[in-house]
Amino acid sequence: MKSAPVTENELKVLTEFIFVKGGVQMMFQHVFAEMNEMLDEISRHYPMAQGVQKQDLGHKWNLLKHMSDGIIEEWLCFEEKMGIMRQNWGSPEENQKLESQDLVMKNDAFIKGQGYYKLLMYPQAQGQFNQALEQFPDSFLTHTYMGMCHLHMGHLEDAVNHFHSVLKGAANNRLRAIIYNALGCIEANRGVRVKAKEYFTMAHHSDPSLPEPLANLEVCMHHSGKLQFGNQLTSLL
Image (cartoon, rainbow, N blue to C red; front, side, top):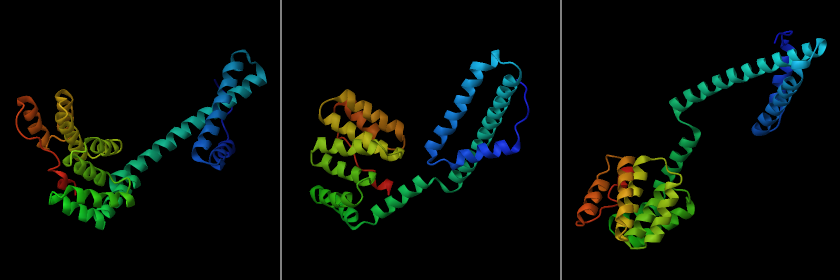
């Protein structure tokens, strides 16, 4: 499909059109809606077009081709720059999570909760962690400690709720392994050993270096021994 080349001014006008629009999502929706509408017009009329009309449609095709190539090239450059930034400094989202975790670990209530937890004073630890959650409601680490406190006190449903809230967003394999292992212990205590073995297996796959899941699988298989959970929490700090 041959036609007159797209002028630099036309490309400039179309490029400005992209960036003048409001929000990013709306911007792309408008741009691609316009491009698709123009492409549909070419598809409908070009096969039967003659003379000036055919030349005009060919020119529009050329314009779309230049636009498509330009968008792809710019996007690839943009992704490359973002990749370099992530590699060198990490993403802002990851940095914000790390900063938030640092604040949690310096929080007085969290520190006191850890102290009570190490002394096996789980009701007192739960009270402190609950105060920490009031200030940091999205803290995966605090939710994990809260779940462990409830598990030690036999409040299984409360423990499950805290653990599942962490699993919804936590990406740390060690943390996920610790929680899967705890959920396996809950199912084992309920007598649902098949489900317990599934959780222990998931825990081992999430972090093979965590010793508790394999030990608990042995307990389930031989129906003897003591289930282990929560012993590796300090490795997250």
